[in-house]
Image (cartoon, rainbow, N blue to C red; front, side, top):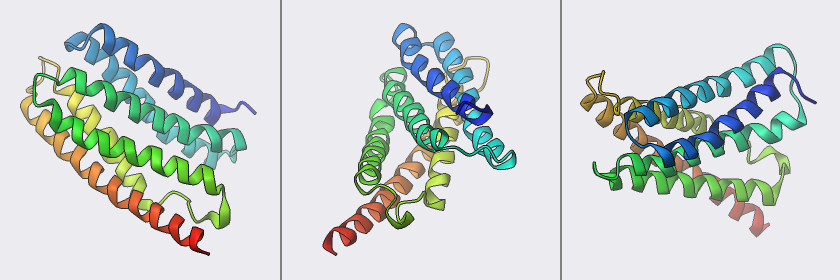
Length: 187
């Protein structure tokens, strides 16, 4: 069923898919500016689709399936290509937390897929929502730091801090899901 929330989620998937192509063409100021705009709009749709679905009672199975896919696609694609943008400026400082976050996302997705909706034990943790917010803020700050019209040194370092915070939250929540899955397997 295509409704407003599902349409926003589909737009987020499309937007996320364009980001790597733009950064393959241009990792400098102009390419990063376009990616910043797309990423910001995709981040807004992440908030809006859930809000509208709850407010207008338009929750659907399609939305429940597509929303986490869109979220992970957006974050993973941007983190993979963000290392290209900052490869000359301590790329490993972005690369290491990106690897941790991406590993967690794949691990948790695999766990959820394997166990399905068993007793809602793998529902999204509140801390995971903070992780997502930190990731989005980090990416917005890092992309903003590439723009010459803004005093960008602080944006870069604040973005790095938020990226590492989200990586630590990702490690913790990933460990929580992994331990829960081990306990179920023992039964």
